[in-house]
Structure formats: structure tokens, C-alpha cells
Length: 211
Image (cartoon, rainbow, N blue to C red):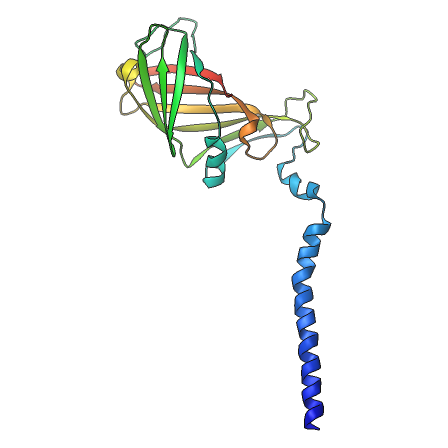
């Protein structure tokens, strides 16, 4: 009788082990069974889409932003009155080099006469994300419309050289990354940028593209 009890106990243990293992394999099989398009829909877009919201710039988002490569030239925005407050240069065209130290980015501009100035800013922990369908029938990779999108980053800015006269404690920057794409963050989506500097003694902007 005791031996029969032992045999039954072994059989029950094996049965429970099989059941337990099946619960492990069921979700794994489900992952394989579902097509990749189901997961890709996290980046899908919809006709008529419009949104503007606060966007966290965590490690993943910053990694994508940090992959952006700025073109070596930029233009200064020319207003109707031709005034750029806070810049001791009248050039339209500038050469640009960018030095990145983690989230601290240093933009070195050189004007057409060789005068230089650096704008230093820190990529913030959050920004504003804007997306909209332009109704131009351009399709994205997920089958929905190819959205126009912006990521707007804002914070304090410091500067020297040709920017010294406009940099005060209240000076701020707004870096706008512009492009077309889906709902997910991807460096490849952004094609152009606009850098605005404003404050009590500053009001100017640069713009250009990414490589």
C-alpha cells in the first residue's frame, strides 16, 4: 500500500510539472504566433490625426535625439526689419560645429567675417511633441498617413563671443526638431531644425538641416 502511494505521488508531481511548463510556453508561443504588424501598430498613425502633448526625454528618447547629426552650415532668420537682437553680427550664413557632452550641447557658430560665438544648452527631461496629418496622401510605413512632427525642447541658454550682449539670466532657447514620420520617436524622422534664443536682450534664431 505504501509503495502504491509513492507511485501515485510521483505521477502527480510529473503531471504538475507538465502543467507548470505549459503555462510558461503558452505566452511564448503567443508571441511567436502574433505577426510583427501587431507590435508595429504602436507606431501606427490615423487619418486626421492631430496631437500636442508633453513628451518625456528619458534614456531612449535622448539616445535617438543624440544620434542627430547637424549639417555644418546654418542660416540666421532674417526678419522684415532685418533686426536680430543680441547678436553682434550681420551675417546671414554661418558655419556650425557642435560639441556634445551628454545632455550639454555647445553650438559654435562662425559668421562670414570669421567672428565666432558659442551657445550652450542642456537637453531637458521633457519637451513638447506635436504631430498632425497634412492630408497630402503620403503614407507612412504602418499604412497610415505620414505625419508632420515636431519635438520642441526648451530651457536656459548661455553664450559668448558674438552672442555675449544678448545673454542675460533670463535668456532661454527653444530647439525645434522638424520632420515627417510615424508616432514613435526616431532620429531618421527629423530632417530640419530651428534654434530660437529669446530674453530681455535677445531675439534671434538659426535654422538648417540634419545630415
